[in-house]
Image 1 (cartoon, rainbow, N blue to C red):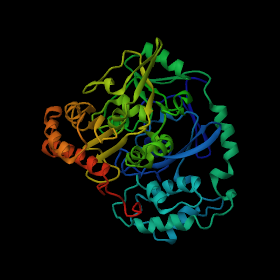
Image 2: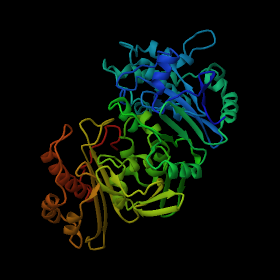
Image 3: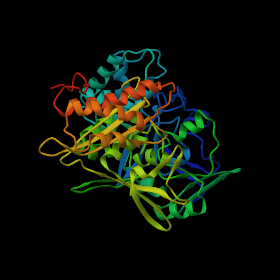
Image 4: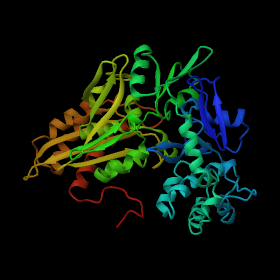
Length: 487
């Protein structure tokens, strides 16, 4: 049937034919299903009180990820398994080991955020048999507790990994084969189209179908992870129609590695891209770890971050510095361009009607030094004030033969510091050269003042990041590290 969204909610098959394109999973759970364990705290994917798990088939296997229900649109859930905190109890009503550990370690205070914390730790429990402290903290990045008291929560996560009962106890492990079969049966045979009044949602059956849809609906809103578009709805109260969901398209989920670099499909999430990127480009991997929390990284995509065109998007500046190439696609075929040429002006990208981002090729920084720095008010789960990325190549005499410098948060688009680059090319890589080049930033950028940072702060920070990059390349311990990252 191609006029309904079908998914499994805990153990029940759901079929929705009367569904608006921007109806959130959180509202569906709380208002229509009365599953009130999932809370609304921030309505912007920041606090984690709404955390649930969503399972989907990846290469024939069932994978579960934590996500923010407050900004996840229900229309994006076709052929998935949605799991809420109510599903964790045992057959006799006993608490799940994750829940029991939080009780034993006094990990719950006011209790409002606790269901979301339980679901984040449950997602970790499903994927890591004995997680270390860093893995536990990473899983909890997207869960904010106003009472504080994270230490008992971390201890609960450590305790539950020590004794794992039979898999038959766990509701997802016990029914995994059954859920896989049910999800296979839900796969759509064609493009799904649902209209509710004047609002419409479309779930294309393939990338070719996506191209056909966008040729007919060039003004449609294409949604992959909804980590930004979700806020258009929950914070700006925008009405969006038609909305085209693409997070299910396996053709956009590929990661292809070669000797020269990696090609990342537009639908690949930050979480899935992390391993391939961090292994070859560690500095970019560390940056990805600071993009939102685990829930946001499970939903958000690099392709969506590019297509959105935000001047404070985290992935474009480092990708521009690395010399990434973008591939666009439409019914007319593919079109390739340097990523930096995609961004024209604020809210405007070089995308023809009917085109969509298909993939991005990221070259490895062979024989070059690369770094990316994200400046925020708090270290984790915060929006960028300034982001600087640097790629440097020196000859044997330590003369700059190539340097690419790109910034976010400094202009209406992600932008290269071309005047600064010109001041550095052909010069010796010394502190004197860096100091002489710093004034060139005033030609390249005229940043604005907003609640994240003043124009003066941004300009000084941009200059200081170049100095920081220089200090790191000559061996100075300039990069701030966590206590457990220091050798």
